[in-house]
Length: 267
Picture (tube, one colour):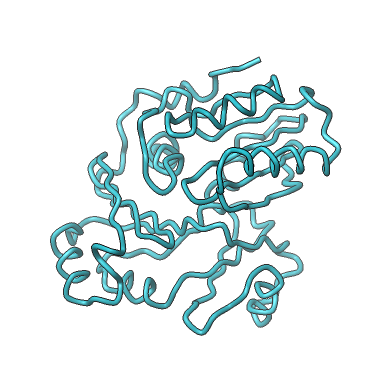
């Protein structure tokens, strides 16, 4: 069964926050969104280390009265239960998840329900670039935003749901039992075969019964259509969040732009 439901109430409304610009940053560059239009800026064109180019781009594109929100879109974040978190050990926590280089800056933030602390890293060059933006309000990790959203959407739900967010260079898998997060894993996107392997490895490991739970894709995009088709061959119960989104949307992580346009900026 394929369902294209979900959140039609959010469709067709105008965005409230037209005074906000959005930068989605990854290892290769960033997607920039302002006034409902998006473009991908590669670091090969505007490397963070070349001050003159970055300063000119900031002056040309980021108007002073625009608030700039920055999303870190990488596959390296760590969820630590808030009750166990101690800021003094932030690097020790993270080193169990990924290596920390001298060029990295470690950041943490609290989920909206105050149950988890999310730890992640950005490069110090990227951090210096962002600090040049006058109305820069700080960073949020992609997984934090998705987690905050899914906990709200699962309010009152008692069933198990598996959510998949596909990006150009990685994909995330979330498993919720009701509002409770039972798993979040991220993998490099090395193609459809690798995607299917990890998806069904997780399903087997968590002992989920085939077709007795929903695989919910976050957004529906033409560039990932074959991923959906391949999943459907082995699991008949899938659905798409924001199914009426712009299916031609591209960029580092197309869903996060839809999440802002359809939910966050309308909240």
